[in-house]
Length: 179
Image 1 (cartoon, rainbow, N blue to C red):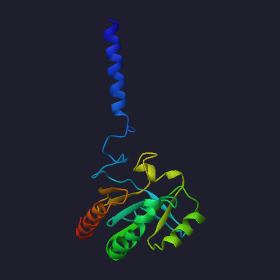
Image 2 (spheres, rainbow, N blue to C red):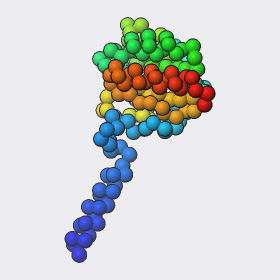
Image 3 (cartoon, helix red, strand yellow):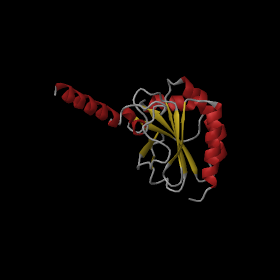
Image 4 (spheres, rainbow, N blue to C red):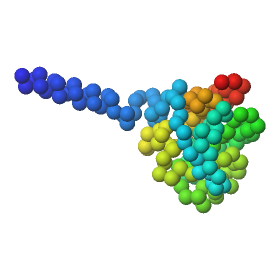
């Protein structure tokens, strides 16, 4: 009887852990969202003092670029995002928003000036936006591509040229689509 009870307790614990949303699944690259998920309405407080929301951006392709001034990989990626994504698609139904993880306005402004990026950048105090997509301590460098329908269409992690090029192809495909 004790063995049966112990087996039931162990099974219960295993099922509890398996159903815990915060358990990082191998291969998910620190995301707890996936391609196809609908993105909720998020409000972005931009460093120029204006605000945007996902509801405001309906019908546009949106790329959220998570970044921070202390992130060396982010710094490496940002010139490519500026030149090959923002400058390429900004006149289409498209927006790229940098989302700076948990840094004060003055630090973010200095960072953006130094990086010479012209795409909009939002503050993310406490990581409120970041943690809607990724797990804590899973690394900041990532891009979330959201289609005109509000669903996640592509996810990147770190800066790898092959993945970056695939992201650009996906953006081009989405910008050209009429959904």
